[in-house]
Length: 303
Image (cartoon, rainbow, N blue to C red; front, side, top):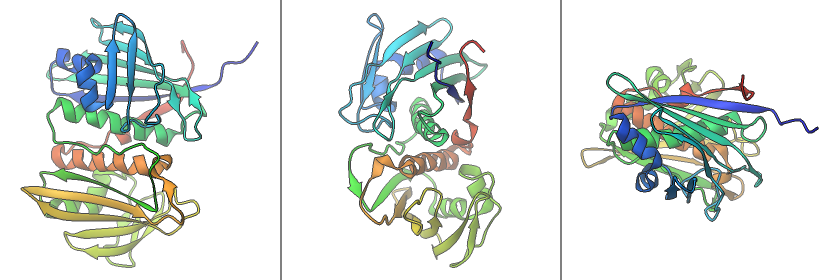
């Protein structure tokens, strides 16, 4: 008899300050899903259809039409389970399952999410990046925040990539957040040890020591990036800030790759989009990243 492949579960909870019926509708209403989750979405409860796709959803090609299916729905208990066939970075499609549970608390709702996948089907970082992107969209939409970073998962090739967002935060505050230990710990790296804010200085994130390359106070901050550099050990991450309206346009560029690459095939592409959403969330709400709260552990059905 064939042995069932080992599985793991990514678990995360987010709070939203809206009544439960509004939070529940956002999980099942086609139009709501098109706003916060997927560019293309359609829900038919009677047919158990829960289909979604489009260029803003990780681990789907733009033209994919996977067979997502409702497995369980219980409005009274706030439970929704559905199957999600995902396309791994190597191109293979694998079966996964997503479980939502929505609970009314005293003054807010809590959405608990479990994503069950094969142990080798998606990396832990892939799962963290995926749900940081998706759930920041959910929280921002529920609480009426400004638009968030939604990278495009297409076959576009380039030697670098650029992501940006607008925030109703003064440029000086954004710069301080990007260039201080307390700021970086708040939105990105809780393990950070130090930052030497001078060209040639060291940014010690706790898991890597990176060179500080460029500084222009309240305008620009650039450092090396080696975590997923592979054959490109001299990658540079550059943050740039510009006044726009009554807030700030925050841009991030990573490059330059030796050869043009499919941007969406790189974990740093959606990884930095997740980080930028965490930065926006931290700047505007002072809430710490969803990314840091995602638990991934081995999973066995019934245990």
